[in-house]
Length: 371
Length: 72
Image 1: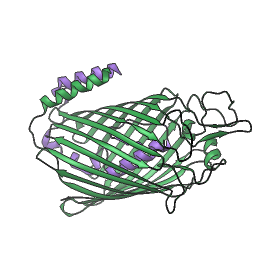
Image 2: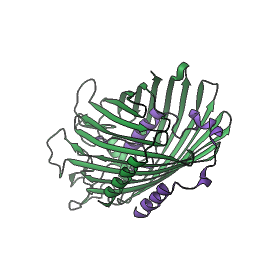
Image 3: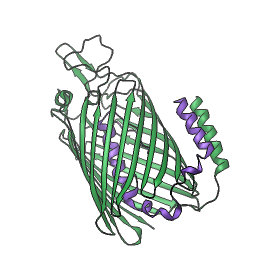
Image 4: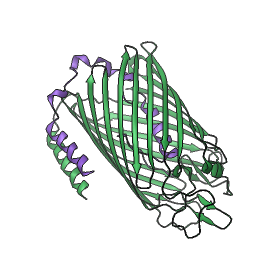
């Protein structure tokens, strides 16, 4: 409740502090196509579209649409092969795709050069899940635009609709996220950013489909119905020479389920010409296990919590990727990326998906232009 | 959490310090380039944010919004 008053105070300050400077808004449109595939038989094809239109000197309205078309994915461990829990949700067996998720977002933005306020709403629907969220983000430029302070908040009001009859303890899932960020220019070639995120989730936080199967037990997953997490991130970008920059970040995450993680990311970008930029990205991630997951075969019928999802276990992952940026006439831009993702071996992955480790390939392709 | 909010509010209200004006407007040409952005390819940031969110148990550390889905 105190946080609510805090944000009301901030928002009331914003109203008084917004002044008239040059706006950075412009009319843009983009078309994109993303893909995801992994060795657990999951493929996702995602066309994306965005449209941003200035409605006055300082106000802009935006619309974004993402569609995730998901192909068949089988679950081992005795599950019905038409019941899949894929990268974007569990679903029915329908051809050619098992599930299609539609996710439109509406955004309104105010920008006067010193203050940027964005807010909007998100809705998504798929066979077994409805997502509804509202979000707001405010950034204030200070010190002749050397410093930027940002506050963001989002609140979701999601709902599970399992594809087979199962009485969940609650079908609701709500997630709140609050971000504080600070950006600072250090030199004409170096800038840094610090971000703190606070996350609070309630409701049914497990998958309705995952279950623990032992000789004496058959139980659906059951997690605590509340989760509080915090993340601290430090990022920076440094110009090594006129054509090459180095982008780096570190994040520490911790939550009250006992999971903590470290994420390191390094990206190098090089201008091969005035139009073409490419580079290399490397990411390393490591997490500890949750405090309620047990070894496979170790659960007892009277346990409170049951977890079989590998994401509740300890594992590491590695990502290597290549980005591409091609600038065209009039400011039009074609961007693409390809990333390969691999986790370390995990017995829970083997148990559920039948693979020793998760190997995934994901790509993006986007064309953005002003109109 | 409270401490962070108070520190942040203090920074917000004070406008920090003029000592933080370290780069003059005429020195900012590099920051206009794609490669000097913290997210040079927004489409990639959005996609990878979604992938990592559903393949790993961690979240946060960025100021971008990710909508909910039945994958977590």
